[in-house]
Length: 202
Image (cartoon, rainbow, N blue to C red; front, side, top):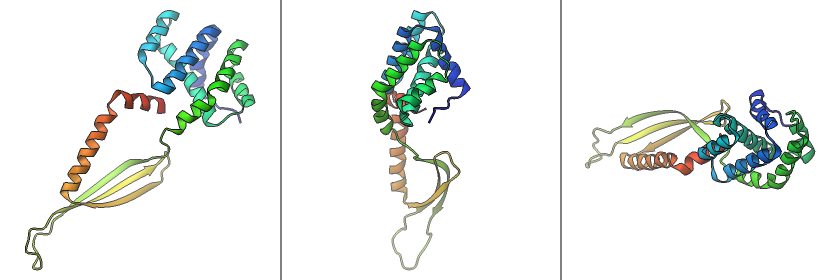
């Protein structure tokens, strides 16, 4: 199979035609390092100063290479299919094609192992409805009754329209505990490490 790339992605990779093979190799090294450790905007700025080009151009070139390598590894393209996919990008310099092929041969398995660690098809929040249930009085119960929350949680799976509904019934203390866990998760989401992982997923 051949890798079908969007026009926008092809335009981002077209920048590689304007630089020599050493720069393409450096961009490939940066792309692989970003896949391992996360994106660092300072690297873009340093490379842009050396090449005397806008930062966005360097960013698009590196992220275009990242996308090319991750998608090729994800679909487990053979070397021949990878070469044909790169040829469709109309790189003028044959050395660039050989360099990209060598990069894919050397690092394809490592990229696949990195991708295997990322979550796939996790359910996503769609909607939530809740109701507070309180028993005001009972002849059979002498002590005070504990209120409870009935929660209808709707989830979607992947990008499709398939949805799933979960009915939960919790008491206030359990709900407060859940809230504290979710608040901790949101705080962790704002951490530097989490932002790096999310950039790579996108």
